[in-house]
Length: 290
Image (cartoon, rainbow, N blue to C red; front, side, top):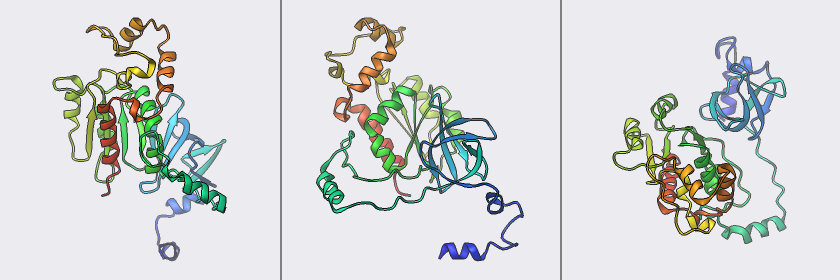
């Protein structure tokens, strides 16, 4: 019924001559499939499509460095393979499920995701919500993805990197949190009197939830037994935590060590409980029904 009303009202009095409906006719429609390589024509930002928020008509694009930007989806705003297009929501895939598929799905309903939640077999990723989760850096984002990625895709929640918490207040102001745009923020070392606690106080808002852990670095949120040690080495104050840990363990390549550490994480049971609780609270907050 809504579609019929839209067609009847789309006459010469429906809007300005160069309104969105008329402008969209000049650009071919292209389905906004996650992973599509996009060029934002106005800014030159190039990246992969994360998701389309059909409610606000914005898209989230992840650049080559991992930076994610939320950009308005106006007709012709993006180019795919050099052609300016109008991005539209993907069409549902036709069902190809045979009795054999259905039987396998029935048997698999007890499968758990890495976060411990029940796996939804054959579920498609939801269009990205306006609400999102912000984390401090790339390692935080990778660890959250490793354990909660399936849940976040089902819920349509995008995780964005702050690349340091010092500019948190500016980011929150730019994202304009509200009832339909909740922000969940995950911080390291969120303890009384810390810099992180002060930054969290600066963004206090009913539509913003800041959680965190007592750990100085997200590496410490992984149980040390994962790599066969009893506890993480003590790092004297004034020495960057990662540097101190690698020196104590005789590690020369931090990047390789992180890849090894992340690769050993299979589920939430290998993470410290404060980190698990902090992430779960954020997911519940940003997916809470209005």
